[in-house]
Image (cartoon, rainbow, N blue to C red; front, side, top):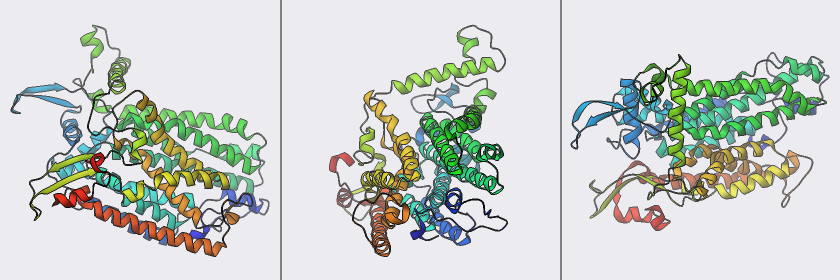
Length: 535
C-alpha cells in the first residue's frame, strides 16, 4: 500500500481463501475490510526501523556503570524482589555496613515494573547492563508495536515506518529506554493495549463482513461475532500497565469508550436498526470480562507479596489491629490498607523539586530532567561536562502542538475515526495530570511518556493528510486551497522528508547529552536552547 492509498476507503483485494459475496455492496465491504499484515516487504521495512532502534538503545547500554537518577530505587528494588519476593530495606549504619537482616520496605508503586527490571538482573547480573536490559527491550519492542499499529491505522507501510522512526529518534523515548525506571514499561503496556484494540476493531469488522456475505440479517449476524480475543488481551495489557504505575488506569475508561464507539460504528455500517441498543446489550458482558482481566492481572503482579509473610502490611490486621485474617479475604484486606497508604502518599506529594513541572510544560519542553551529571571526564578542553538529560528531540516535540491542531482540523473536516482515537490517547495520557496540577502535586516531564506514541501518531496523521487530497478521502468537506492529488502528494512528500531529516539531525546534535558523553562546557552550553529552564 502506497502513501497515496492512506486515508482513503481503499482496501486490499481478497486474500487466499477469502470469498466475496455479491450481496454485500462495495461501499460496505470497503468499510469492513482491514489491511492485511501478510505483506513480506512491510515486515522487511519494519525490521529495518526496529534494527535502528535496537542498535541505538543497546550500544553502550551499561554506561554509566553506576545507578543514575531513580535507578537507586527501582534497580535496587528489582534485585530485592528476586531475593526476597518483596521490596526489602536492609538495616545499615551511616557507612553502609549491614546491621542485620532488615525489614520490608514501604514502596508507592506496584511491583510489575521492578519484577521486569529484576528479570534482566537475573539474566545478566546485578550490574548496569543487567538492570537496564529489560527496559531497553521494552523500548525496542514498543517501536515495533507502534510501527505495525500505525501501518494498520493509516493503511500505509510508509507511514507506519515513519511513526516507528520518529519514536526511535526521540530523545525522551531513547533516554528512558536506557534507564532502569518504570515509565518505559508503563508506556509499553499502554501502547500494547491500544494495538490490541485496533486489532480487535479490524477482527470484529471482518467477522461482520463474513456474516453479511453469508446473507445473515444484521440483527442475527451479531451473534456470530465470537469471542473478542484481542479485546481481552487489551484488558491484560491495561492491567499490566496499572501494575507498573497507577496512572495506567487513566486509559481504561478512554479505551472502553473507544470500544463502544467502534462497535456502534460497525453496526451502523452493517445496517443494524438499533446500533446503540445492540452494542450495549451484546458488548457490555465482554467489556466487563475485559475489566475483570484488568483487575486479575493487577492482583497477579502482587504474587510475591501474597506468597511472603514479610511484605509491607502483609499481616496488618493480625499484627497491628489484633484481628483474625481469613484465608484470601484477609490478605486482600491487608493489601487494601497498603493501597490506602500508597494513595495517601500520592495525593499528598507536593514537595519542592528543582525538576518538577506541570503538564502544560511537557510538550513545550519547558523543564527537562537531568539524570546524570559530572565534570571529571576528560574532553580535550579546559572544562568538561558529562550529562544525561531527559529531553525530547526538540524538532519533534515542538511539532506536537501544531500537529494536535492539525489532527483536530483534518479529523473534523474528513470525519476520520483515527483522529478521534489518537486524540483520545493524548487526552488519557496528559489530561488527568492537569487536575493534579491544580492540587499542586509534584510532577515530572517523564510522566508524559505514555502519551508520546499518540503524539507521534498525530504528527504522522497530519503528514499523511498533507499528502492526500481531501476529495479522495470523503466526498464532503474541503478545507484549505485545493491542489491536484499528484501535486499535493509531491509537496507533502518533500515536506515529510525534510521533517524526518530535521528530526534526525536534531537527535544527532543532542546525542551526547542523551548518553553522558563528555563534551566541552562551552559545547554543552550551546545545547541549552532555553537557558536556565534546561539547566
